[in-house]
Image (cartoon, rainbow, N blue to C red; front, side, top):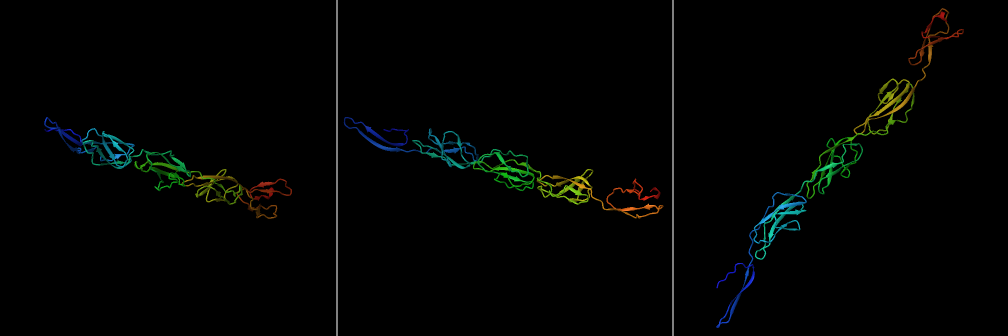
Length: 364
């Protein structure tokens, strides 16, 4: 008798054959044990993994699927190296969360179940590359700052934990050192500067730089500039007046101007002795420099008249004849004042004043 069993599952079996006896024979039986072994599944192939790098994001969707395998109804397991999780899915779209940048490998495996051996695909490598950061800007930057003030730079934007640095340069492209990596605390000169912020790369993000910004450091006023306290407020005519000043912040040259009632005169150097008597104001101006404005100070002073040198008659005799013509002249005196003459005699109570230095004796 031939019997066929066509759908046994894998396993160990015992088959017993029995034949009934009759009036002459007892019943009889026999048994045989045998094993049905598992077989290999069809080749399992992993498809859909990109050969180009995936860009990092908080959630990365990697489209992969499998073909092949022989045991329907069992799930396909996907194992990714570098993380501790197994992603079990029978779908082709799988989202992987929080996977850092780096190189990874993935393979698929399918359980054999009762009748098939487990099967795995070949390993496929893939890469997750760094993403671009959000735009980086320098925030709260003024267009101008006065000289000698601290300037602190701050940023907004960017992504990740990269360090932030600032590159500040002057008009000659010389780098300006920073305090605490973000503050100009040194004595930088007036002028125009540029600054660029850079946020460094991190595990998952590329380095990024801000646009270039510019700002200007402007001049400030000089301080405590004035005429020296040792200057007198009153001078005699022809005195040589030497001006001096104190204070200011630069090494700039000092120039002096004199203003009076009817004149305004610049002087060479810091002294003058040619002023007429009167009231004057001296103006001192100290030049600024790249960091400081010019500065001026004023000083009021008076020049008083002085005595002339002695005035003396010359060519004048002590006695004359009645008919003589009398002439004379003078020496001494100073300035351009007019010389006048007064004649008085013993019997003359009225003084005669005239300017021509001779007289007709008949008039006396």
